[in-house]
Length: 478
Ligand code: NAP
Image (cartoon, helix red, strand yellow):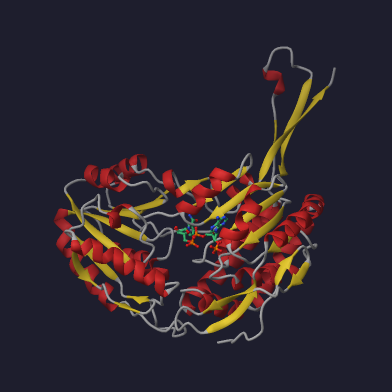
């Protein structure tokens, strides 16, 4: 694996800049230092916004064929250096090298879909003559870019979630300022490197590294920022929404996703899908399976198979291709997960597997007998912990699944089409997977949640809709 020894620079207003004050980036596996990144100040953020005011004009005037070409070249650049990208993701974050390679491949797809969608930003003609007296009117609407987008991103998919904002922003003619997670800023800087190498005109994209609590307000509240595209936790999202003022908001927040397993389901398929859905990326996944509701006829059989597979999940060195699960993002986070589990066990919960911590590593953990109102069942655990609930009926499962302040995605395993449609209609989520876990996504589908899981949709085409406004054009032919 590559060892980065020199401090990294940030891309600010078309220049790669270092700063005397730096933030150290660690590998959570062993706390070794990877490198440092600049600790941007409020003045730096203001400078980035000033540059983006110019960049927004350049971006809006870039012909679509040039946008397509530059995004494709950035994707080509990442494809050529994909192993370097994967190594950085696996080093600065929680992902194993196998998971990191998948993220790089998805990032390339996200960018290629963005380039493709750039040519499809179509409007519509409008039948103005539907109103009596408007027979001599003709016109249409088209989408125009909002201007400058503030993109604030989390640690758990440090490359692809940034690409989900940068690709569509450039494709739709906007300037964008990225504030990546402080724990994992290197992947976002590598994405900026790809766009720089691809010839993206300067000042369209800045990646400003620094603490969200220190420089976030300047970015979010600035009147020149026309949209805040945030992916992260509910608390941070709510804070941003309170102070942002009159601008577009896209909020991709967390969840504690439910999966329902009915008595007619293929239990083996349900078990293996829920295992990867619960423990992939160490459970630090907004779509991660946290609550599984199993009809009582299949409960014992599901539990037996699930616990067996959870115990086989291999926890260890991220660099090893045979490892299934690496460490949590920090030891502090692993301790928090351990405390939540301990609190549940002090109540009525029963531990079926896992529950062991070694520094930042936490074993795949399975609980049952958890009351639906317990904190661990209502909040987002964001770690490798899953709760199994026996239920009498689909109605009970749906009611309990909805009984939380989140609603990102859900899954249901059944062969009965009528029951599947009942779940589709009644589950309060942004996406439902039939015969799969909640943890299913392709980068070209509308993606987002309801309730505390957020508002707005990502998924390239949907993101581009959010990053633009329709402008109506009307000709009076009289
Ligand atoms: P987080 O603590 O909310 O941080 C997310 C980002 O917000 C980071 O860049 C952080 O910067 C920044 N930030 C913190 N305080 C801020 C402020 N006052 N103003 C502006 N920005 C601020 O979330 P996280 O722990 O990195 O990520 C985990 C969460 O993200 C989970 O809840 C997960 O479910 C959610 N998530 C959702 C999706 C989705 O698409 N729905 C996808 C992935 C993750 P610093 O790092 O400098 O603090």
